[in-house]
Image 1 (cartoon, helix red, strand yellow):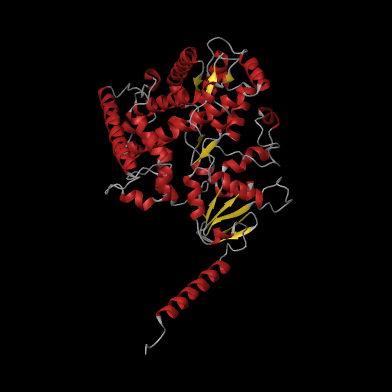
Image 2 (spheres, rainbow, N blue to C red; image 1 turned 90 degrees about the vertical axis):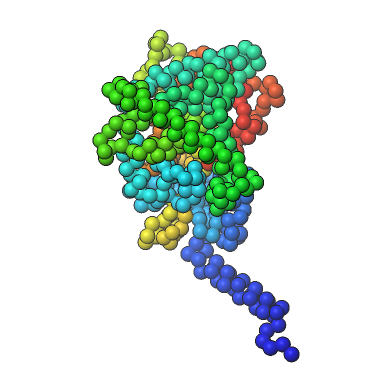
Length: 497
């Protein structure tokens, strides 16, 4: 006769005990009363699957619509939803301002470390407040509006060449792929400003090895952030599905090192008058005003990543949206016709409708509209009417902030005129660059590129229209959002006239 519990009895007992403990933990969780799908209390599997498919951001937005707690009409979105056992998403202007304040009390969540290139740390991915503070202080000078003037000729040259290549492709193909040329323009620009030399993709009309590797790195980013441990192991052991990531990481690191060493030799050869880059002063400053070669390499790599796709994607959606609306296009072209011959960015900064068009594109088509996870600080916090314990991951996403109907009426409509009567609420909810102490360093460079590119495009092609060649349609432009938003079919054909 067997003593004690039979094996089946013990299994049932263990299972019931586990279930009771799990259920009790869920019921007693400080997040238990926050609305959300039932499974978000137990697992983040659904969230991970949607992230891999590029639809997590839209899913979270749909949850805010579903759990609307004010009118139940979908006009006001529910301010807080639970999206996983330990994470909530907040859609509230005052809460967003608290989370993304200059005080930096809500630090970036550990997720950002999985987003970074393995073996690197940079101003974007770091969760270390002191590291970020020091690097930002050293990096922000050249990117200020005043200091960017020295780089205007580089940006202008790249924009002019992009317009020329668009014209040539239209003549031979009947339409031009705005996404392709916008990406080449932005990548060549930030490459020259970071490494002292352009990637010359505009000249060749093709991606070089570095930009191909960069594309692979971006494409596999969802896998790295979803399965960070596997991605880390994949650096040392070949793992199917992660091998491409490992190879491109090594190649891109080597490319960045070689490029910066070439530039360093130029600085040493003529220290008084080296070709200007965003890192020039960091090569020759005082001891506490420089970064190591590895630190500069890591920052240059994130500059290329953050400064290419982001600008190119917003520019692509902007041109597409304007070309679909004859009234907007006509009004923009009319304003641009007032510019003097040989205009520069100083003239563009004072064109109200041009800048309204850019702001509206940044609202509706922000290139990085996904959630920005932060960690609730010690002592907890009250956000959106809910008490959240310390350690809770709390996200805000520009995609939803920019679609609050009580702040932006008819939020899905591309309407630049809404910015003619800007309210405080509109400004406070507007976060295409993030916010607070972690706001994008390149905001002024991105706006400079957008102003010049949009102005030159619609001066050159005032009658441009969305093409229907090669089956191009609105479905091509449906967004896939991982961290950045891109057209589903990775193209945008425009007939330049």
